[in-house]
Structures are given as structure tokens and as C-alpha cells.
Image (cartoon, rainbow, N blue to C red; front, side, top):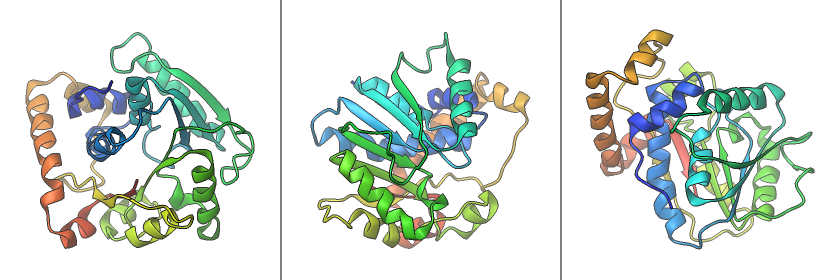
Length: 253
């Protein structure tokens, strides 16, 4: 069973990945859409994390979610440095309470599009910050492969309509309409889509290692993260034009 996680608790995962409050906020915002969606169907027993983020973090939020649900988790990526980064983050968290014990398999694939090493099916496939690094002509093949592997698919990508975010991050992005079109290639119905991750601070803020560590224990920082959690719940009430302009992430479930 999943439990309520605060931004401060998710901050521990972000620190292990070498990230900060912005990543913890992203993880919280993703949970706000993932948890109700998952509750609408049968509890998944297996989850595929189909690629690791291009730049920010190692998707420890998805691993936490899988652990809470009790899933067998398979992580696959075609880049050895990304897999090494994940293993280092997991090693950092050993002996802490931030991440429960995992039923985890990690695979390096030779082809992130066709995933030839995977010959089993999954109950859930999740992709976060992957699509934007793929050749646009191959993105449809990637999504089709995920839909072949799992009946439920969750896609998250940088929002191309947020010029500041994609400009500072250096990542490519997708329009929400592009993500919807990809999800609909195989006549997927009842798809939930939208914009999330609109932290009330400018993108590109960097902090020293000491400042990030201090944020994990300071009372004022804890209060600020509590306020961020309340704000995250209010994102969906912003006008659609504002969400389109300011959101860091577009999603389709």
C-alpha cells in the first residue's frame, strides 16, 4: 500500500541522486497524478521503468512507488553512466528509511526503442524524461513497444511550451498534443493528460552540497517544503494557459 509522502521525505531521494528541492517537488507532483490513476485499476504486481531520466535524477520516485505497491520492478536503460548513477544512488540510501527494500532487476539494453532483452509482460510501464532524447521518428515505436509490454502506460516528458525550463535545462521537450498523439497510436482510450510541476521559484537555481544537506534538517526548510506541498495541490486550479506556459512536465496516463 502507498502512504502519504511529503516533499521533505522525497527530498531524501533527490539528495541521493545529487539533486535538490526542485526534483523532490517534481516527484511530489507526479505522485499527485499517479496515485489516483493507479487506484482506478487492479494493483500492479510488476512494473517496468523504461529508461532513466536524461539529466535530472534516477527515477527513485518510481522505484519508491513500486516498492510501496509491492511490485517486482525492472529498470532498463541503454546508457551505462545512467545505470551507474542509479546504482550509486541506491548504495547511498542503503541503511536509511527513505526507500523500502526493493524487488529490483536492472538491465542494460542494446536498444531503448525495441527493448529486445525483455520477453516478459508487465502490469505497468513508466517512462520519465526519456521521449525527448529519442529521434522524433522513433518515439511512436518506443511508445508502441511499451504498450505491447504493459496494459497501463505512464509517460512524462519536458514541456516544450515552457521556454525557460527547456532553455535552462538544455533538454528537448514535447508539446502536450504530441504526447497525446503518441499515446493514441494504438487506440488507447480513457487517457488522462495534462501539465504538472510548476514550482513557485525560477528554474536553474543551484545550491552547494552543504546547502542541500542543511535543507534536509533545518526547521525553516521543512516549513518551506510543507508550504510547497500545499501549493502543489493547487497547481491543477491554475488556468490552462498558465499551466501550459509554466509547467515543467507534460504527462499522459
